[in-house]
Length: 99
Image (cartoon, rainbow, N blue to C red; front, side, top):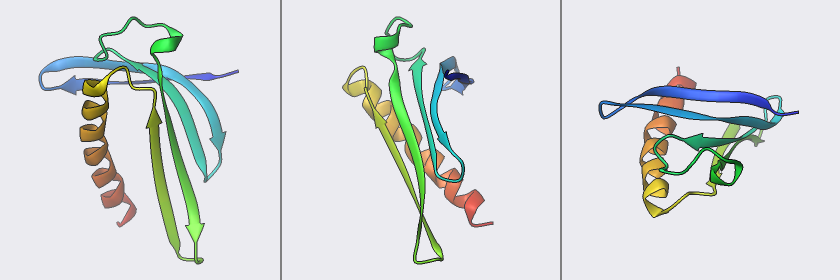
């Protein structure tokens, strides 16, 4: 059974809400979830959900490779919006990881 997940906040003065379900968790390795975004312009129904997968992979006993994959965009504008947000998120993850 999938566990619910939600994200909310403000973006350029607008309240946004993203909600979905955790689909897969593998400790210290994988987090996969689907989500629907209030910005998508689509109705909140299963076929409107995108899928996000985060993976960590240990290389050469010292290096960790982080991979983020997102699929199922509603349209090209949604893809661009997510890609812009992804850059900010990855910069924040890098900053935290290097502390």
